[in-house]
Image 1 (cartoon, rainbow, N blue to C red):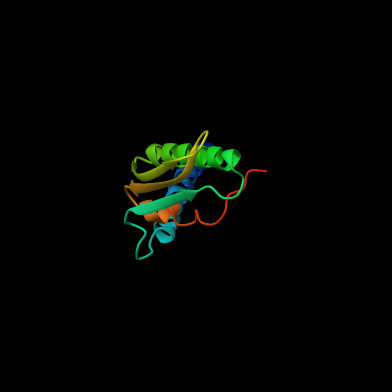
Image 2: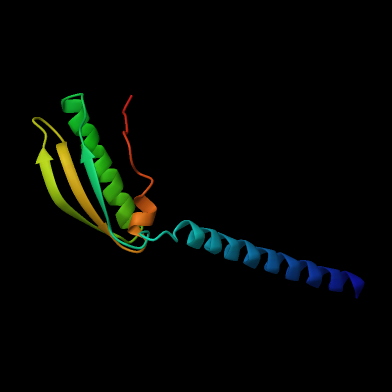
Length: 116
């Protein structure tokens, strides 16, 4: 009887620990995406810097990466404006990302991304 009671208690503790972990992750995500603008749509502007053809190709890669990531997150991506590169890729692309917490997810994507 004691072994059975210990086993049942351990199972219950494990179940409660898993539930607590799941709830803490949801709370953490809710806290991270609780800014005043996190729930609205966002615009991403990708611009080729110095580097000519390779920079335009890099913008094309970033465009594909961000579009696929947004689609994976069940967000809608609309290309608002694009300027084709001379040979490949884009000189610049402006995207509108709409969906749950779109700005919250993408607000950290700022600055220069370099391909080395």
